[in-house]
Length: 371
Image (cartoon, rainbow, N blue to C red):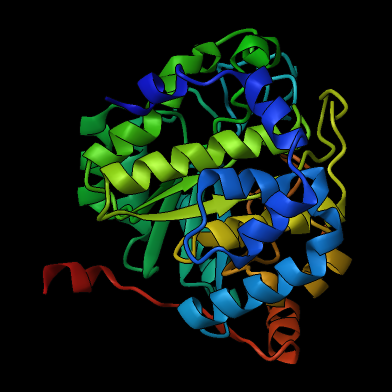
């Protein structure tokens, strides 16, 4: 059985009713449970849990400190291309945005790398639009070959690929693959993705299975907060995580919490997710799963990022650019979305230290895989 088979046994409306029917007693039982279940997770993300947020935050802090220590992993995204064959109503790279496109050359990649390295980063996330004719496996392998001597850890967030492709990229030096379902609401998914390969809901849903089968070290999951009911979407994401951990138990996992941000030509959010609700969600994931890594990007405001560090976060980006060449080569190229926290790595490192934590720039090396 792959995840699609399990997913198809669940109904969106039934899970929504279940979440919104949770009571204070359900929340209290979840908080005191020694081994929390997906039903407990529903309770912790339900409206009934809102008065318990302080208690959730305290427990989340304790669990995170026990498992990860007082450290925050630092990373930077590097956008290689904004070319894309999909129409996605929430993304600045959408094919129907008639603007100049940019894909970095080898020379431009190395210029961006030099700038990012000079800031002190050792973890890098390579990001592209989904344009198979331009940014394909050969392009990714070439980019990885160019940069892998400069970074301890390379992650990718690109179009869904086949298992063999992921195996080749893993062998080339990719440590983790991030792939977000965007929304697990199958009935409306096509509305947000009217054209392109990404409109195939099932193919995208099965992508983490293909990554798991490839032997890649880590898989990153998430939903785009703002498309549909965040509670129901997050339950299905937690269901996905639960399945993957049990099936590919040697793989590590991370969850990201992207909220919709302004971008060229996109729709307004269908649902507004408040800062308080985002904190509730992050803490609920930590109470469900002590081992999963939780990441907060520069989509979020300075104020939120100033205060969220002790609540369960394990990684943060800093000084991010969401356009190809955005650091040094072509700062005015098309962005995927506007960032909110524009502080550089020195400022974020200072913030982390002020919070009593240690910013970590390197925690893994490819050499270790050959020991």
